[in-house]
Amino acid sequence: MQPMKLGQLQTPCLVLDEAKLEGNAARMREHLDKLGVRLRLHVKTAKSIDVARRVLRSPDNPITVSTLKEAEYFFSHGLRDILYAVGLAPNKLEHVTQLRSRGAQLSVILDNVEVARSVAARARATKDRIPVLIEIDCDGHRSGIVPGDPALLEIGRTLNEGGCELRGVMTHAGDSYNKDTVDGIKAMAAQERDAVVNSAKALRAAGLLCPVVSVGSTPTATYAEDLTGVTEVRAGVFVFFDLVMAGLNVCAVDDIAASVLGSVIGHQRDKGWIIVDAGWMAMSRDRGTAKQKIDQGYGIVCDARGEPYPELIMADANQEHGILALRPGARGPLPDLPVGTLVRILPNHACATGAQHSAYQVVRGKSDEIRATWSRISGW
Image (cartoon, rainbow, N blue to C red):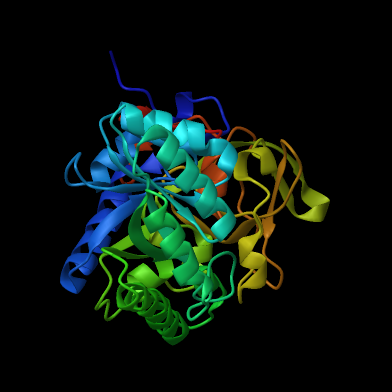
């Protein structure tokens, strides 16, 4: 059979450039190898075993998940060393222990003594030393124990004496997404490192084991210069990148591997609009670049080969309609895109856009040939 082409697909759909994916993965692996730390791939971006296999060197490599459904899925495909990196709700403990009873090397995180007591009670009841990492707040971005807070040792002792395995400490430098210079991201990477390394030292000084010291965000992973004391880096967006990452100078626009394929369905010429069949249900509602120096609307518009049209963005979106227009201040002509023309739209946030779709249509480079269709999961 002849391979399918992009033009044979029903739009909108999610397109993935395998060559860019492989290049992004290779650069991150090489960078972390030089820093002497292992990658614990965060699979929340891709949610696909086919993508993970092109990033991981071995099925023995560790991964990070953001849902227990991801843990189930990747465990079913042979990946066993899994960190569930969202603060644990007690109502998920049964699911955690079920996964572990089937052979998953699943560890969890928490940041308060109440949940620590719940996990310890479950560990005693099941005689399973559930591995736990304590979440550290390195930047005031979200969750975690502030370094130096006495609660760190209280939680550590609760876990240790309650029959759990105190696996270590972890943090996520989410504030790195708010930095507007590379130097700011580098400083955030050092702050992230110091927060967990010092917390690990505090636990060890109190006689508690702390073998794992885990950090993670794509910006800090990219620009970290010294990870002394850190044992692993969690990152995931780097496999695809997106316009928020490009706005942070973490990648180039040309590194973005995922895009949404849409079709021109009409025009509002007096308004300077081109209408496509990919709205916010295809792109997601994420408008992360609105906070950056360059607002990319709902995404940068490219031709079917992935080449951006000058100054053309998805300026607005309804549920199933995307409105393409020249960005404010642009002086060039609106491209002539007749009805039926295919466009590829680069997303603001790869995780959010990916979540709108059930599969990737895989291409390579500028070719319009569909090399494969890779499924992806969703839900919790």
